[in-house]
Length: 261
Length: 247
Ligand SMILES: Nc1ncnc2c1ncn2[C@@H]1O[C@H](COP(=O)(O)OP(=O)(O)O)[C@@H](O)[C@H]1O
Ligand SMILES: [Mg+2]
Image 1 (cartoon, chains in turn purple, blue):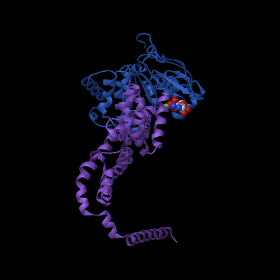
Image 2 (tube, rainbow over the protein chains, first blue to last red):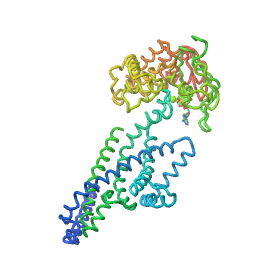
Image 3 (cartoon, rainbow over the protein chains, first blue to last red):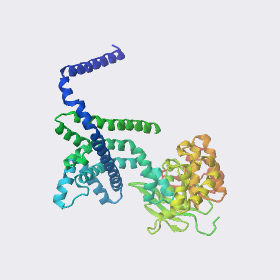
Image 4 (cartoon, rainbow over the protein chains, first blue to last red):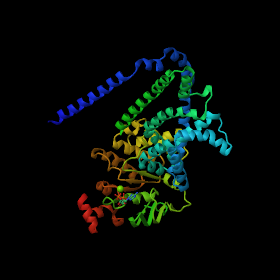
C-alpha cells in the first residue's frame, strides 16, 4: 500500500471515532435535564447585570493588580537570580522554588489566616488584600523565571556595546537589556496573565464580601440562591469570553516573534 | 608620533586564561597617540581577547594595561570613565535594536557624558553625516544594511569623542560589496589622527593605513613592524605560513 493511501485511511478512521463519540454523547445526554439545570433564561437574566458589573469587573481588576505586582516582583527576583552576589541568588532561587512548588490555594489561605495568627500582622485590604498579596507572591515567582529567560535571551553583545560606551551595569540593564527582554517575553507573560485570570477564582478561600466577589464566587452564591446551576454556565462563558481572545493574541504574537527572528 | 610622551595604550606581560585554557601568554604592545596598529593572526589566536582586555570587557589574569598612563586594572579606577574614552566597534555591530539610529547615538552622550539633549542630537547628526548615513537618522537598525549598521556603530562611538578606537574585525560580517564603505570611513578616521587598534583580515587596509602591524599566533605576538615589511618580508615561519594562506 502506498504511504499516502495509508495515511488517508488512518485519518478516515480517526474521523469515524470522533463522529461516533459525538453521537454517543448526544444520545446518552438527558437534554431536558441539562436545560432545566443549566439554561434557565429567567435566572440568567436576573444574574447577568451584577455578574458583569461586580463579578467580571472584580475578576479583571484583581487580575490586573496581581499581574502588575507580580511583574514588579518578578523583575526584582530575576535580577536577584542573575546577580553576582551569591546570597541574593540563593534567596531568589529559594523563593521561586517555594512559591512555584506550593499550590496557590494554600498560599492564599496562609496569607489570609496563618499570617495574622502566627505573626499578628494583617494585610491592608482585609481578606481580598491578603488574597491578592498571595497571588502577587505566586505570580512573581512564575514571572521571575520568564523574565530571567528573557534577559538571558538578549545577545551578550548588547551588554558589551553599552558597557564600552561607559554605561554602568545598572543603566545598561534598565535602558538596554530589560526593554529588549520584555519584547521577548510578551507572549509568555500574556500566558501568565491568562493563568492569573483563572487563579483569581481561588480568592474565595480568603473570604469575600458582596462587593469583592469575583466571577467564580459570585456564581457559587448564585447557585445557592437560585438552587440552579445556570450561573455556573454563565461564569464559564464569561471566563472564556475574556481568556480566549487573549490566548489567540498570544498565538499571533508568538507567530510574529518567530517571523522576526 | 607621541604628543606628550605617554602612550595611548600600553600593554605589558598581559596574560589571560579562561579556566585552564591560557589564551594570552604574555603580550607586550604599545600604541602611540595618533597611531594605527593593525592586529592579524589566525582565528582563535587571541586577537579579540587582547582587544577586549584593553577596555576591560575581559578581566586580564595578570599583567598591566595602561590607557593614557592610567592603570585600568587598578581597583580604584572608575572603569566606566575609562571606557567612555575608548570607542569600540564590534564584528556584529551591536546596535541597540529597540532604539532609533539617533537614540543609539544620543543615549550614552546624555547619560554618561551628561550632555543636553540638543547638544547630543547635534553631535549625533554631525557624526552620522561624517560616516555617510545622515539620512538614516530616524530609522531602526533592522532597516539598515550591514554596511550602514557598522557605520552607525562607528558614529555612535565617535559621538562620545573618544581618544582612541578599538575595532574587532569590523568588516568580517559584511557582504563583500559593503566592505569598502566601512573601510573608507576608517581610513578617513585614521587620517584625522585618531588612535586606532584594528583587528582585521583586510591586508590591503593594514598595508595602506597601518603604522604598525602585529601578527599574533597562539596567544603570543610572533612578529611586528612596519606593515609593508611584515607583509612582504615576514621573518617568522608562522607569519609566512599564515600570510601564504590569506594573501
Ligand atoms: N568567554 C570565553 N570563555 C572561554 N573561552 C574563550 C572565551 N572567549 C574566547 N575564548 C577562547 O579564547 C581563544 C581566543 O579567542 P579570541 O580572542 O576570540 O581569538 P581571535 O579573536 O583571534 O579569533 C579561543 O580558543 C576561544 O575559544
Ligand atoms: Mg575574534
